[in-house]
Length: 366
Ligand SMILES: [Zn+2]
Ligand SMILES: [Zn+2]
Image 1: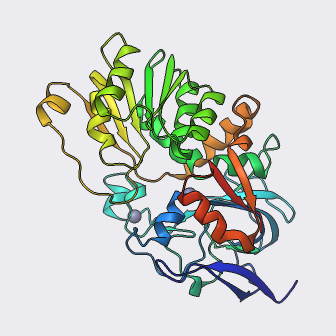
Image 2 (image 1 turned 90 degrees about the horizontal axis):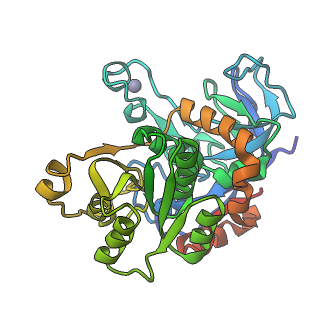
Image 3 (image 1 turned 135 degrees about the horizontal axis):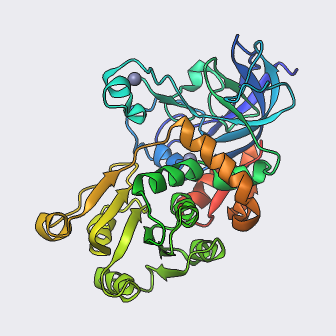
């Protein structure tokens, strides 16, 4: 083992990324060390670099959804099925840890993603606490963090093509309660929207429409089975876009609309795309991008709408999404969502490309 390990550190909002060296970590009892194979650069990392998330303990090593090879374990380690995880295995891990199972949110509300003790690799972990982000040559899996071996049918490329959008899109679709034969509109064609479009099909939707931009992302939506896509750079008014949806739904609006755009104005617009008594899920407003104006009478009360928020994901979503990916990888070809692979030394470039939406999915291979 080399004595030090390289990592890319985000020192603070707006500051250039720095390459630093860390002491090579050893596995703690119940933990593991992974040799990084691939990590992602996603919209969250762009938000982190702009300081748009609260409670981030800069300096941090970004990279929350990761794929690596087990270098060593601190004693026996098993997956959720009880199978042994041994050195050499290609794995990912649930990036959320510290969820206490013991507080009001965990025990009474059963809302584990709102547990105040919850922490996330690459987001709420400081570089001062070690290699707890994926933009590095190695990563430490802390004791208690759940490791998931990648099923044989999927490699690192497919898994990272899904990235954090995979369990997030899965969770949003689960929240939406799609019924067989429903028509679904997805607002937003980023990784979360694309994965929501995939899982909506698996959930039994009759038609899936994606409203978004730029064209490369809409092409990806078409390839993975969206019936039709609408480019918001050509349909530039809310009225046009709502009419487009109504024209395809007998004038009534969609049964389910999933917001995965991050633009607050998408919410009142999406409610206008929704049929009476439809279900609306908001998953794209991960940072506070401002307010939107609703008409409570038209948008909610008279529409008899069900509106649901969707925050983060739990282990169950990652586990089940991974099994579905293994089963349906040939159909949806998640690896094709990766536009470009970068070296660790190209992290700044990857971040810039993600910011200007030049890539669907950017992956770093340390
Ligand atoms: Zn808790
Ligand atoms: Zn992410």
